[in-house]
Every structure is written in structure tokens, then in C-alpha cells.
Length: 421
Image (cartoon, rainbow, N blue to C red; front, side, top):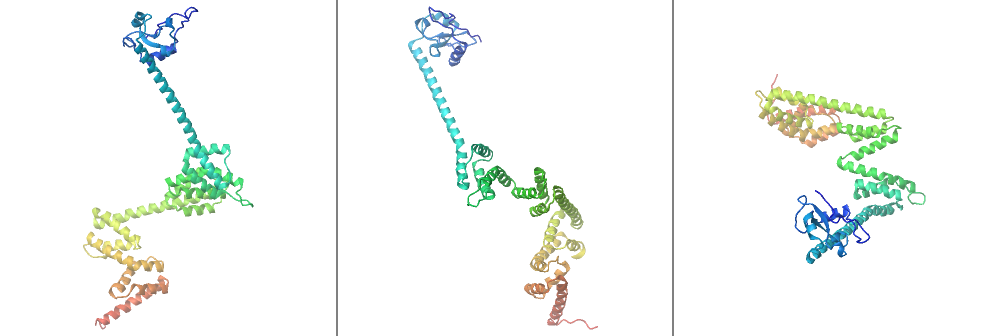
């Protein structure tokens, strides 16, 4: 595309005519979409000129309102003639309307920017009012800048909540009953950290307690690498160590090495138990596969695990599957027996286990079941005896003697006698 000036006459003292700057010509071309306003042809089909609407010789000014895009042919053929009055008027009105709209839009954008700037000031001002209500102190200019950064990171609501926690936990009152300036500064510096902990707690429950444990550790030992301590605490919790146990380790720690070793040893023990449990699971699953086949082993394992969870010994359950029930054992028969035995165990044996604090021997469970279901003892009478005797060592002889006496009494009542020697 080639752009040339249509009025090439350099400024002179006689005419006052001056050349059109490249910038002004380009603005005129953009406004007119690089199209000749006389014939409608466009660049690059034609060479465009920047022409005066009202000729210079008639007093026309060299400004954007009196300039129009013209092709080479139209400009040379036009001479000093003008566009029609209507065309000139329409052109100028359009330009004026566009300029006015542009100005109005710029004014609106500036007003909008000022409103945004004012809105940015609202949250810090509101928080400063709240801080004054809580402590009796206001922010310095440095404090305002810090507060803006904290708000930008966490948002108004989270900072407001953290502010109240900081005041509750870290401010102290002097002899006159007012909050001391030193404690106010301490509380202010903790606002961002508290907001961070609160957000982490929502994302991962337990994190707040972990930060608290790390704080205990910081206060007890001289060297405490923050990120290593937090990573170690999280790893121990994820491995199954309770937060109570981790806190106790922190309270007893005399050094970073001691704390680290205690937690790592505990985690190793947990993992070893998990490995043992997995080995047990594989073994039990294999045994049940032998008895019931691979297609029933999964269901059998779930049943056996549920029975073990209420205190029935694993060996007893497997022994019953192996040879304790009946010949030609099937999964359906074993499942019916196991459901029935587990219900009786929960109803009759679990209360005794709690009183005697033992893992009740499954073979003795049959004696209790016989007393209650066949010999019509009440469960409460058996529990009362367990409470009085207190230990399994004293309860077991009582159970054996009571069962023997009850069986003999039942036999006499039914007319059944033992055979004579």
C-alpha cells in the first residue's frame, strides 16, 4: 500500500498552507477505512491521498474534521471543488459524534477505575475498625500495607476470622486492664499464619492439630526444622500414629533427633504390624480357599473377619471349618453356623469379655450358651457372678461347676439317671 500527501505545497508565507503529518494522515485513513470517500475504491487498488474537504484556498483548516480520504484520480480531478454540503455535514457530524462517544467512554472508564480504587480501600478500612474494636489500636501505614497483602491472599472473611483468633490467643492485658501494645503487635503478626492454618485445616482435617504439635516441639528444643518437622508429623499420622501419641512424643522430646527417632520407630512398628496383617490375610485366605474353593474364599474371608472383630478366635473359626462341624462341609452349612454363632457371641459372650477383660475362650462360650439357651439360666445371673468373681481364673471354675450341677439337675428332673457301674 502506498500513501502520499495530496497537498504537497510546503508552507509559505503567502498561503499559510502546511503539509499534513504522517500521523494525521494515518488517523484520517483509519477513520475512513482506507476507502476513497468520492468513488468508494479502496487501497491497495488505488493510491490514497488525504484531501481537504474545504479547500485551503477557501480557508479550510488542516485538521481531522476537514480532511477526507481520496484516491489519486478523484483528488486530481476535484481541484477546488468540495463534497456536497450534505456529505460534508454528515461527515463532520459523524466525526463529532464519534469523538463525543469516545470522550464519554473514557470518562466512564476513569470513573470506574476510581470506584475500583475506592473498593480496594474498603476491606482494610473495615478490618481496621474491627481491630480497633478488639484491641483499642489502629493500623500504621505499614500495617495497612501488610493487611492489604493478607487480604489479597486469603480474602476478607478468612482474615476477619483469623483476626479474632489472634486477639483471643495472643493479646495480654496490663495492670490497668488494657491490652498491651507489645501483645497487639504479636497478635497482628500471627494473623496471616492463622489464616493459613485455618485454610489448611479445611482442606485436610487434622492439620491444625499438627501445627499445634510443631509449636510444642519448637518451644521444647533449640533446633526444629519447620518443614521437616511438619512432614514427619504428617507421615506419622498417615501411617496410623494417633495425633495424641505424636503430641506426647513432642512433649517428651529433648532434641530434634530424639523426636525424629521416636516417630520413625513408631512408624516402623506400625508398618511391621501391617505387614504381619497382610501375611495373615494371605494365609487365612489360602486356608479358606482349601475348604471352600476360590469362588467362595472371598465371601468366607469377609465372614471370618467380621467374626474375629467381635473377639472370636481365628484358630477356632478355621478349626471348625476344617473338621469341627460335620463331614462333607459346604459353604452354605458353614455360613449358617457362623452367622448363628456370631449372634450368640455378641449377645452372651461380649458382655462377659468386657467384665472379665479377657479374650473369651470359644470352647467355653458353648458352656455359657448351653446355660442360657438349654438350661434356662438368665444372662443377668451369669453377668452378676462374673462381676462378683472379677477374674477369669475365678470365673472359669464357677462356670464348670455351675454347668455340671445344672446338667445333673436337668437329668434328674427328666428322669434320666447315669448308668450304674
